[in-house]
Image 1 (cartoon, one colour):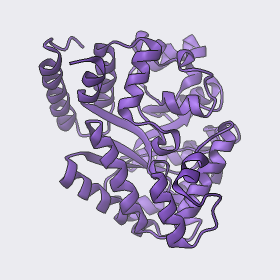
Image 2: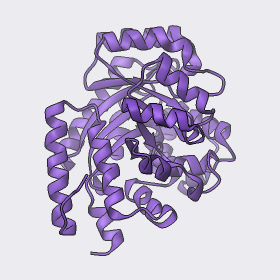
Image 3: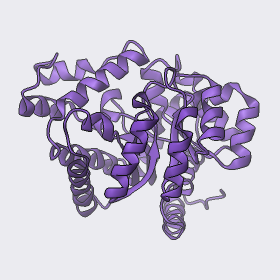
Image 4: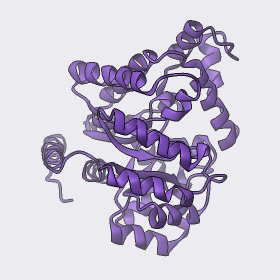
Length: 343
């Protein structure tokens, strides 16, 4: 089997993928038509061209346009199902998908109905493709800690398949530290803790996330590579990094994939995984992420498989399920390569 074939066949886990950012261009057209939304695109070709970014702020503005097109709670079922269908095509076995609840509640949608629709998509995808999925709620840092507390109220009222919380949004304008009380409460609720950090801001953002929020995983974490002390801290405490290389390239966080620090993180022994972030918006999928790492950063097949195992080990599955999944991944790797896993 050639390298591309091996990459397609490797079992994978995706930790960092936004449901809204997984909306297919044809589904975006459907959403806009269903909701009678004025949109800057008329055809499928226009919609695909719409996903072009000048910089990170421009990406955020495009993302907000997509959110505006979601006008009914039940539309989340189709978006979620299609996201998981795409992952299943890449031999992804488990997904932790991010749901930016306050973005949609502020536009008049109901949290509980959205969660029900998402879970209908999850259940259908598991039945049809065998892919598992749990949910991460993004409290969206732009709205501040008070809204974060309100989001936790929603989660307390309905928590179906929700395993963790996160803060995405404008990292430079809204640092992590003020969210410390929100994260303390989330931990007391038994939720796992993640924060976007080190994507559009420097290493101090990552320091705040790990010191003030006590997170278990960092979303993106690119800036950590510029601070050896920070990398040591992450390594010593087993804090994982959810790397999203193509996303970082498309939004200008890195100027080329050769400049992405994911290989640095792996070589330092950090628990780093790879994800797509917003796959439809960036024209990528999990197979492409792995392939680009191989072609641009000279990742070997064993190193790519290590990313898969890191994602399993740092997932928010139960310990029993993590052990079972890791064993099945190792057995599959041995069948594919004819060599034993040494990690």
